[in-house]
Length: 365
Ligand SMILES: [Zn+2]
Image (cartoon, rainbow, N blue to C red):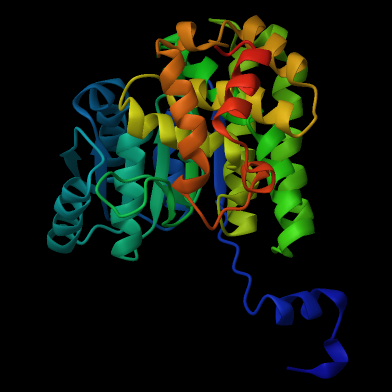
């Protein structure tokens, strides 16, 4: 390295070894955005072949249109592979498909699972991936992480960032409103995940990226400030939410991990996933977690709860459709879901009584 060029940035680089940020290159959000898929594809240099990963429903909603546009406007060879779930088996099947077809690019069209499968399999085969979300339910639509069932870890692992994100609000608006509420909650969760990251930095000397943390936190604040717009059929609100979700994804790309966007509130949600699988939505579980972890951080938990209420999101066990015992069990399990991720739970090391006090005081149970 040229020592004369030793700026503060290079010092940081030396300290971190190589801090690699993989960011999306084209992001398009808006009504009818999907209609520009051929143009985006061309700009990125994909003019020959593509593979679309979708579910049967999301294929009808958006995948079919993507295929038509690429074939008609770009004369590309476009194959489709439909998946139902996001398991290791699904990923392996798509990897096989990629090996056989050798597409230039993979499109993930859908909500969580389809995008996760497309992201993970394309990363394994080292080919680019474009995200076409059909819902706004969580930040995985823009993040470099994917959550696959059957892997050792019950949380998301780094795969690759989407090269482009095409978020058509007209399509996303057709999904049940509950999905968007869940997305708002996944963004609001950054209030506590960033606090946990700061804590890990202060107490464990963990790497802390101020820019990534600020971006995640700003997204949460932006959604909270605009909560009045977060209503069904309100396109402005949906636009704000999509941008916030994408910014959260980018903050993870900058951090190189899920750290800015996933703290104790996510660990609580991962524990609930184990206790009551496929029960409530990811964001909804994180929402309850954010209320409780805000309390532990000494933050304004009542404000979080009031905003969730305004959104029409669940704020207690009953509304989430789980038992009081499930909440307590999840709190006790949370820290062990990911032992290396230091959060407020590791700092406080509460006992069962204290967890019950926490859940009762915040009226979650
Ligand atoms: Zn999340």
